Length: 495
Image (cartoon, rainbow, N blue to C red; front, top):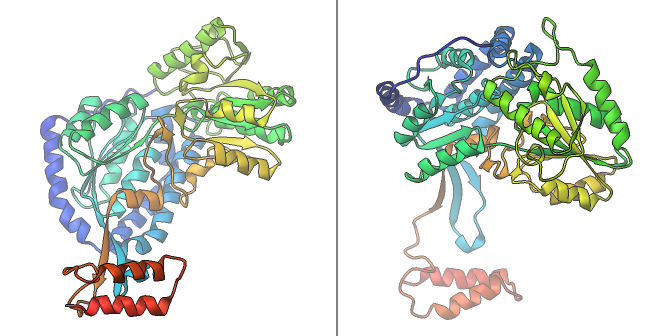
């Protein structure tokens, strides 16, 4: 476990960082997109070159196995960078869009410009990925970024600070500390806030941001459910649940925390999951599967939820009972609970640990009701061989993301936006969606300026009947392009 400490940024240092960002903004924003992307490419090459060293640092900081650091932190960042390099030139050149005939003689376009100074506050569970992906999206859009990583993973924070040195002075800065540092950052009134973390902290940030009408993206918690239908590939579903629930010791906002399994395949599914858990390794040089919890606070939350569920009648069918857990190593072996009710905290609240709870259903409508019965709306999945059933189910779930016969991996596809509904967040990011959220989109409509008037300009005298005819010719039952053009041009020629 980490013993490294990092000095928290004080108010004077935060103000100085803000001034540096102010000074750096105009030169950075004025660079051609191709020049900004040269820094993004350098970052990609640097991360690729140092990938194993970075994975080791992340593993030490968080307790996750090195292979998970490589696969779930380093690779998603590299994929984001590669995607941005490909897509950004088209996004940040003037985008021509269609102009309706009612605006004859005009052309329309969208120009995307940087917002200014962006405050990004990132969490401890994926300190590399969940910091750098929004950072590079904001930087590519021409903004200057002030990042506050979690104080729980100082080794990762120091790594991010080193990476910030790849950019011009003041363009990307890292501030250290906890809630007070975040509060002071927002007090400086950044032009945009991107926060990833808990619902409770997200509400505090949103309230402070609202005082200054600062726009935000909030990526918050989840209580994702997996539905296993009776026609599913049960072995695949069990493998997906095992990895989707226990990867990073369950400290994933997209973690499978609820499994809703058809009563006909419950026994087969659970037997397969138990076999998977028995095969997981707890030690090794690089490729072990079971790591540790990152913080004692989160260990306590998981312990409390599981013990309370057992006290209320749930049955633990895999993993050690809570009284045998080790609060010194913070390791929790995977836990599977059955006999869970909808009133138990372990079913309702985000657990954020290597635990999933199982309930059964007999009809797909019952499964849908169980799936949607949550305050969260981040993601989820269904496992079935029936693609029509899957499509119908997908159309009815209330989540920002969804997968069919897979879990979690959609978050690494940067052609897709990523964001939640309900209490799982506000807004979305990733690649194009992220770069757009960090941009001011200016809508531009341009007239040639050769005509002296427009159809709705003064004077109004004699125009009502002509406008009524235009409505009929353009929108109504008697659509007639020739009459529309004649009437339209007649109005524009009037003094």
